[in-house]
Image (tube, rainbow, N blue to C red; front, top):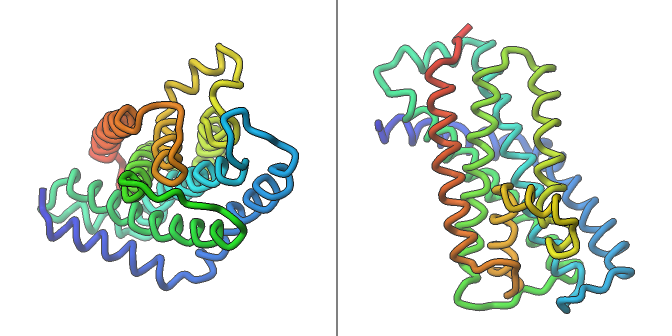
Length: 251
């Protein structure tokens, strides 16, 4: 793996994120809507059997949603790069395609992490409480793993799909089920048994649960089970993304 290629692609994504201020505002609107509508509005009507406020429960889910939507949409970068010829330019270099995938994953994960930190800051302003513990710093780890997992999925889809409309339709098919079939909005224990089985197979479930333990001190699983689930999911999807990217048509 060429570390210089990884660094250059990482830096490119970070610079694009910093310079696109309107993009940052647009991405934050949906998490803000969910925080105000569900966290404050619906949260006043919901009483969790596990104790604690619904706002404290749902904030990790909203962070997970923000990471999911931002990460999986990063596959559009492949389409843009293919259209404007940048993809061909980087593929004719002696760098391995695996290095290119890792650079894109790290760049996207960094920008997704910055957006998530902003979401946490907004949540604190509206009443979210962080329960500090030795696991609190691990929220960064789970954010990065969620981002890396679904950036890899986005890169896979971007490598296989050639037009923007088709990409948007396919990603919409993935994002909403992945979010609603996780523990982002409701506890797993209140879901029907057949839905619960699907939820257990969803990588986002373990990422949100890990963040919930890190931020609120309670979750459905052990934090080590959540970490193991995310590590396995990330490794599998990065491998799939590298394989798909290796087969992509440069246009």
